[in-house]
Image 1 (cartoon, helix red, strand yellow):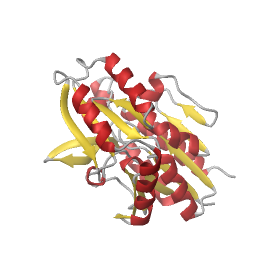
Image 2: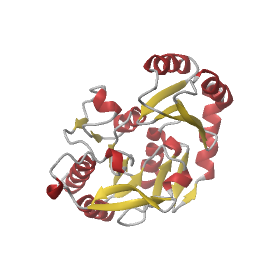
Image 3: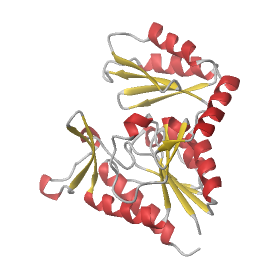
Length: 270
């Protein structure tokens, strides 16, 4: 059988130092492998055990890194295991095939966005006008597809986030708060649509997925089976679905558990 495994990266398989959640005694902490360096500094990690599990998974299934990161941000990551044939970036806005963007897919995405939701410029203007400079650190636009803010989480107004979500909903957009970032993303821009396209191209008999944020919910629902860790937006909302398993592990050990579950499922008789 052909199995496609689509997994979110940040806080699902890879973790910043702040997100590791190493709550055990120091002497019992897992050995870590750095998988991302940015501006000469180590940025993202997974356990060495998770690295071996991912290598094994890549040998036995079509592993598809699936991320809200831009292509440039994704290409900083050096995952262990075979080089993935497919990767999904910019929340489904780009499918990479052997590292190169599929232009036809991107054109299809742009056509849907033009037809179904308010333009990016309107959303960006609203963010710039209403966000408080006291807690905003950066305004960013990701490959002309969506916008996000980097904020001081401790100072952020939760009421503003709720008001933004209602405003965006009425214009065909969705809002997601992940760590220090607030994303405003067009509803048609989804990881699930890109997963379905990769599954179609590969003739997949089974699709598996993992993710931790609200932007991963559609991905988990689109797969035959899914997993989420014990941290993140989905865990905070106690979100689940019939084919999605909520795992108790938090932090970098959750990434290791997710990979164990994925690999066990790939190897299971069907």
